[in-house]
Image (cartoon, rainbow, N blue to C red; front, side):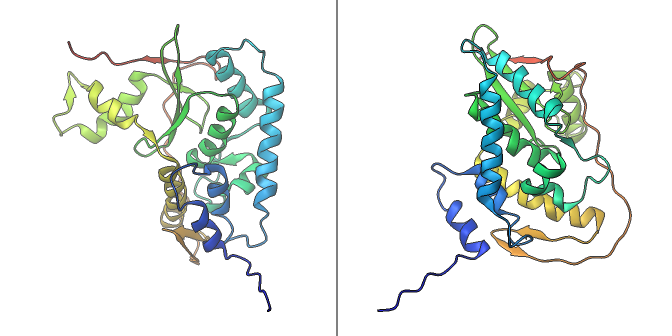
Length: 265
């Protein structure tokens, strides 16, 4: 009897990763999105490089480090030592969505930077989640007592965003909705937008980000569409620029802690 070993296609491999929400491999699924564009991509090499980052980071962690200490260490390591940052010069380059490219260039967009940042946060046992905030993906970390609250961070800049910053981003969207109270977005609406994104939602948003890159910048690129991967060739056109983030903290080691919303009695 002859046995045939079939090498899975890029789509088949990706589908196998995302078929179940239980133990969803966020980093591997996000990295595999590039396989249609880069067929020779070694996913394991990407995972190994991130593991090296994680091991290096954990070696610097004191045994008694609290969550706030871990968060400061992570931000310093990720944004300052490794040099990851948003790609301001070429924001809409589809390569910004591919993790293996970002690991080489150290430049990305909020969603791709968030995937890597969240993986490193998990290695430190931080209670970190992605946030599908309108227009700009964010990350947040829940802090236990005595700080007891959550820190929201813009992965594009590494800066912490306070309540005023977040409300300022939301206000234009709801100016005529009746959800603005005394010129500010209600706490209920803010908490709605700060809900944690699932791993599946994060991968889907990362996939859609390439479509946005093509639509806005109209430069030569390829995109992932749904669970299938389609190739689109396009012509050069105008340059597009990202909307700058709002951040009033002076450094990446200072954090605005959002207190837990009080339940009405």
